Image (cartoon, rainbow, N blue to C red; front, side, top):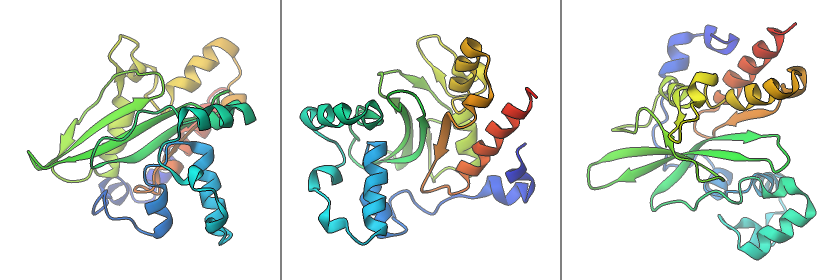
Length: 218
C-alpha cells in the first residue's frame, strides 16, 4: 500500500465521482476528449494565461486530421502522443490516462461509455497500437470507486497473450519491460504517469508506487 492510501484507506478507496459527464470546471469540459498529450498541455497553458482565444481552433479539436498529425510529429515525435488513439464512441469519455515518456509519448486511455439500453456504464482501455484489453469490471451501474478503478488498471491484460497484469499491472509493466532491457530503475522513475480529472489522487497513488519501486533497487 502506498503512502497516499494510509492517510485514510477507507475514504481513499471508497471515493466515487458523482458522474463522468458533469464537468467540474470549463477547462475540464474543453479537455474532456482531447486525445493529444501535448495539445492538452498547450490548451491548459493558454487557458491559465487567459489567452485561449488566441489558440488556433485546430488545436482545440478532440481529434486532429492526418495532415495535422504529420505536422505535429515533424516538430518532435513526442507531439504524436495520444493523437493516434481511437476516436471516442458516442457518450464516451476518458476517465483516466496512462502516459509514457517514450520517444512517441505513447498513451493508454481508460474510457467509460453510458449505455441507455441497459442503464450501465461500460468500460474499455484503448491504446495507439490497437491492442485489446481484458478488464474487470467491464461495466457498472455507477461510476467506479477509486479502489475499483485501481483494481481495473492493475488487473488489465492484453488479450493477445502478453499478460501485463502479471508484470505489475498496466501502470507498472512498461517500467518493468524497460528495466529488463536496461537494468536502470532510476532512469525509469518518471517513465509512466497515471492521471485523471475525475480521480485527482490517482496520480499521487501511482507516483508513490513508482517511487517505492525505484527505492526497492537501492
